[in-house]
Length: 164
Image 1 (cartoon, rainbow, N blue to C red):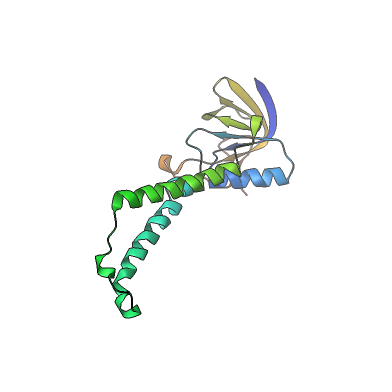
Image 2: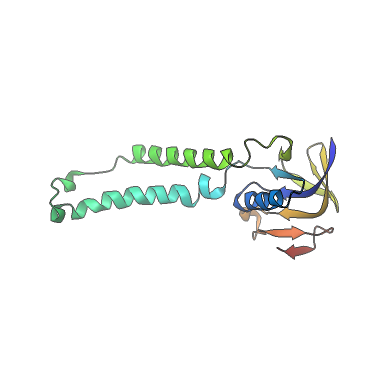
């Protein structure tokens, strides 16, 4: 199936979801193309689960001041790390579910799962589907593959980048 949209957004991470919100506000037609796991890096494996684990460690560390606050028995407290990590994973799953519920869950045809590649200056292909786009494509490169190109618009030539 071939179709034409004003904007193709590559990646459903934090920057891609932000780009999608801006494109929606501008009332432009778009597709959001994502080839990896859904849910932002921050929610899945980044700062959010890390902060949950740091909070548990901070809570456990506070046991050292319990005695001066009149709380006895703090020195007997310890962490059950498998249970702690299960708690952190549960929080992570809740955060990812909330990100998806507010972004990609109800998108229908605007969301395409798969990896995109340019086959012509204005044409992206995902699997067998070709998406002809307008003059801009929000291109978001995964950080492991190189420096992130976040919040950039590509002109007619995919190698020509324009800052947003």
